[in-house]
Image (tube, rainbow, N blue to C red):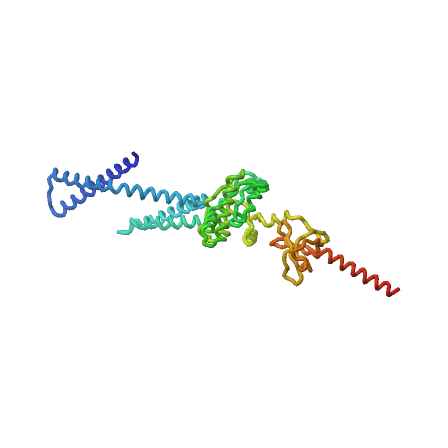
Length: 385
């Protein structure tokens, strides 16, 4: 019903416009050609023109309504993706640009021919420049607002600022940590609380990986999407998808760092490069690999353990074994024990960014060497005696 009313209204507006244009055209023709037209014929002509304009307006109303509706939805979608901070600073820049355009346009308004159009062109140009500069310089604009004194002492403001991120408990998930899958088990255990924030550009990257022609990448992408659905449905934790994006940045890692700075929230990841870049820019990072290394059992030199040597190492005669948590154990002179479970003695522990590496030697060999040294010492003692 509303749709028909709008179409009828557009048709009536077209009829009024047709009547006005017809009257102007008829007056122009009568004045220039010194013609005369009876009043009845004049009204008949204007009625026909108005009726034709109404029919045309009613016919094109459907296309006009669809065009306006699509434009409104497109504009609404664009505005929803733009952060509120950019909208506010952009509006301030637009207002400043229009003010400058009006002040300058007054100087040209009395020029012949073009005087009336210069203020209009200036409003368009300066308004666009004001919006663009306002959105691109949003950080500088907000820094100006931060200089304005506020109620409360400085200590209270600093305390509130420092406690705000910790109280929110929000954490931003990276693509790598979603695909890894261990985040689901950590959340299930209750060691991570708060809202899990998933940026839209991370979801887009996961979708591209899941649609990849490479089988391995496709499986990894689908696994990441399954992990997100599992976190959202099975666990009692809030998952929020944010539409905040940064069109001036192309890399997903750079967008994650910018989003973390904007929201004052840490990033959950196991990407070593992202970890270092975020730390350089003052963003807190929760690395899953560091957590895994932290919960591994502590092994000290001199301790004994039983391991199974499964392959040879890089150096000559070395054997390699693994603990249940994946920690690599390099066994000196352990190549001959491949496929066997032997007791070993820890000699040193090396902690690297990739994980922990344990160096050990077979305990039986240590006993043989010790017995051999004792035999040599006993022989030397007998010779001296």
